[in-house]
Image (cartoon, rainbow, N blue to C red; front, side, top):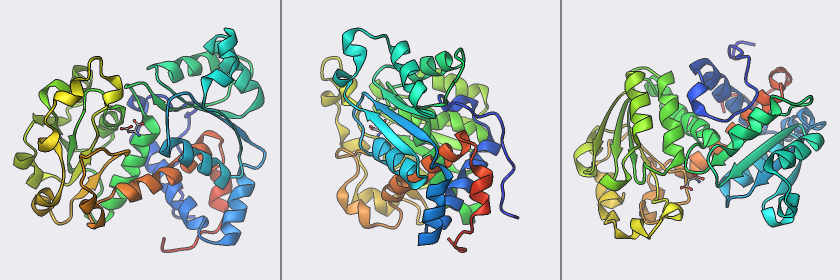
Length: 339
Ligand code: ASP
């Protein structure tokens, strides 16, 4: 079939976006688009449910989550994958003193894939390392680890950017602004790594000085020759942007309420900013939002965050398909054309 993308081998865990390559991103975007087209009919939805009907997934979310949990849960169900969950660590044997490693190993005895979110950075990476040492390893998906990485959010962000710029040459060459708490926002950190897969992207970081993008990411961007500038004046840079990715203050990481001291009015997107934004630019947000995007923006066609949220489910189906090796079976199903 003409629209089958080049197959990317070698993906087992999804932990850190720094290791992703363009071919894989293109393949995941094609898989997501294919799934949404197949899911449009009742027959298609039924056959999708057959794809994963012999698989089981564990959702191990010990840090709060609405979208990521629900979209993974629904992504599993779209594929007929049965799910188990632990969302409250007080209900797991970890309270009896069981180690994290033993808990993960136990989950892996019952399921085919573990999707996990933790407050601690590096937890999913440790789980993946553990899997690589045992006899029946299962893939680990990092659904958010501390303030460090949120790879599947970055993948759905890429899917949203890719779809939005479909008629304008894709993501290559675009000017992408990232605004808000860039220091502690794991979504923007993960997204920055993926920028290495595109050519001539220019990044504009807009943040209060105390919440600027961290040096490790800036070093990475320099090494990859990805151009970026930093500003704390949205007004000055807004007219140049093709996309503005707004984020909230990550106040859950405050030591002494420091985010409360920031005048956020400069980092807020409302009517005035809509008037300055290019007519074909887009506004994104990983959600949940605070006051950084005014609700009146929601009805503007350039507001992409609600579509971005739904794209998350399709992209997470694509990730599950890829990790469980179901791509070929998916491409045998007939989609509704002209998605
Ligand atoms: N939902 C995203 C995350 O889990 C963004 C946020 O919480 O600000 O990181």
